[in-house]
Each structure stands twice: as structure tokens, then as C-alpha cells.
Image (cartoon, rainbow, N blue to C red):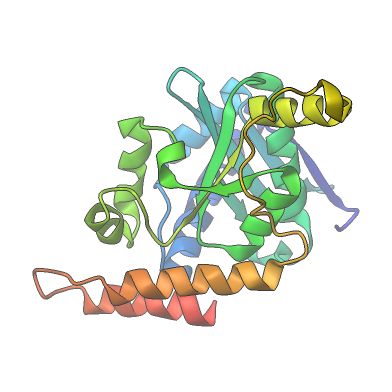
Length: 249
């Protein structure tokens, strides 16, 4: 990562960047042909006031990137949302550093919470996997209706609802601190003293099989799109934009 870039916890002094951040979020979603929950500058400023955001800036104060924390079901679940990087600084490694920093902040503020994310971006999936997230089914995510309302602004929302919120083009990933602790505890015990092995999901990490997982994600998205039929006969432009994102992103 560029040594001129500083990645740190956001503060109220960073509110001046809120308009730039929300504008870039909207432009990025439009360019990729997909959607994220729309946020206002006031919402981003609130996250800065609460100490629930991470920002990246240059030494001279230019904005570089941003991400914030949202909590659901009385902080049983936490999401690191709205990751965005200025176009001039993409592919510089700053997104990885922002994700690492906001993950650390989430663990500090909500040590017992399950941290989850939904994304179509394979690069983000790789970063999440390196942090200890694992691919999971949608049933393992929060049931909070306010979270799922955020999907309404996504062009894939019709697909999500047609699948009764059980599947979509996004891949769900989860970091479960209780499960991680159980795995570490079991690993530290002599084999003879472990009466029952703790539950462990099948190994679905990226380690050693990134290309295979990439192909699986593409196939899943292809199958979902192939089976998607809009009843009103409209939305062809929307569907084409999704296809463009999937195969040319």
C-alpha cells in the first residue's frame, strides 16, 4: 500500500468527506451495474460521530476510502458495510487495509458478535476469507428486517425476493467468534481428552482453491440469472446490466 496513505478510525472531524463518500458510493454502484444500500451524508456523519467507521486519507488530507459498522439484533450480528475506495487509489491494497482495520474495530466494539457480509465481489470475498470469514447460507445471517430493507436499492432485489431471501447473486460470509474460539480450544487439547469434537463447517475458504471458488460463484450467478423471469415483462435493461457486471467485471 502507498506509504502516503493513512488508514485510521474516523472521527467527527472527518464529516467534511461525507458528501464525497456517498457520491462515490452511488457512482460506483451505477458503474458496476449492481446496488448497495443507499446512505445519506447525514448517515455517514452519524457513523463518524459514533466511532463506528474507518477512513483512509493521504498525508495532505485527500480522501481515499471508507467503511462503516452496522449492528443488528441488539449487536448479535455486525456488518462492515459501504466499503468504497476512490478510483484513483483502487488496486493499491488500500481496500484490504480498510477491511482489516474495520474488522479490528468491530471485534473491539462487539467482541461477541458474528460479523457477516454479502458481496458479489470476488476480491472482497478473498479479503474476508483472509480475515477468517467463511461462506455460509443466508439462513445463518441476521433476520433483522431493517437489514434486508437495505437490499431494496439493489438491482438484484427481485432475484432475492423470488428466492424467498434464501439466495441471491451475493455470497454470504460470516466470522463467528464463538466457533473460532471452540476450534482454537479443541486444537490446544490432546486428542485423547477431547470427548466430542466441536461443530465445524466444511472447509470453504479460499486457501489453495481461489480459482475453483471463483468458478463456483460465477456458476451460481449464472444459474440464478438463467432462472430469473420478470412477470411484468420489463427490466431487460436491468438484466443486461447485471450480466455485464458478472462477465466483464
